[in-house]
Length: 252
Image (cartoon, rainbow, N blue to C red; front, side, top):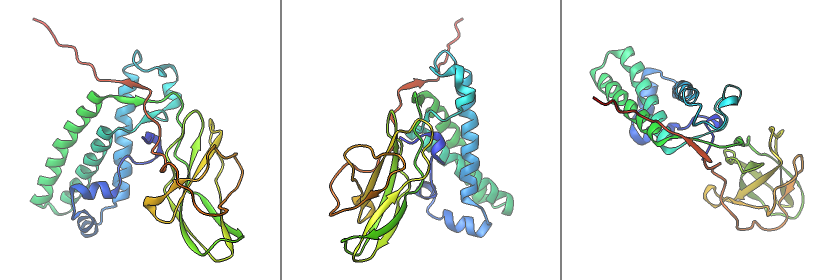
């Protein structure tokens, strides 16, 4: 799973799975969907931080939580759904404010109620934590060098490796010409990272890891020969501990 600090938990495509006409609404009402996703992320993040700070007995990193922030929080499916619904509620709130359209008002109220339920479910499920967060890698830096490869279009992603493997970067594409080989490097490694993995394919759904062991930081990987079969791009770290909602029933 990705870390909360890797980026917005959900995407525009996630929003469209609920509202197929969302892009048309955004164009008509001049609503910045990326901006709404970011605003929802900030609001969910504030709720998560408050939730963790109120439960120091459950949080193994309670003493350092203010310094760590949400860098060790794992995005769960429940959390992603909460973020998606909150974003939709914000979008239709803006749309209603622009037009006072009853259809937009109904959508705003519908997603507002669903957001509240999704938030409760997310906290009931629990906030997952990792001991050391390995962030999602930045986009791979591709080039070509003289070689013996054929002309091709490659899909390329990289991931950071430390105590665990972080989520793979958003894939990038690169075209090579006949008589050249694909070469890949990464940007500067964040703290806690000791190596990196490379994923390459001729299509997004055929990308596979091309290295057996983590590659050396600062080094260059070159495709010499054919692509090999390997694991698919990493989705991120699994939670190692959980902070859950607890409710005390009153007697009498």
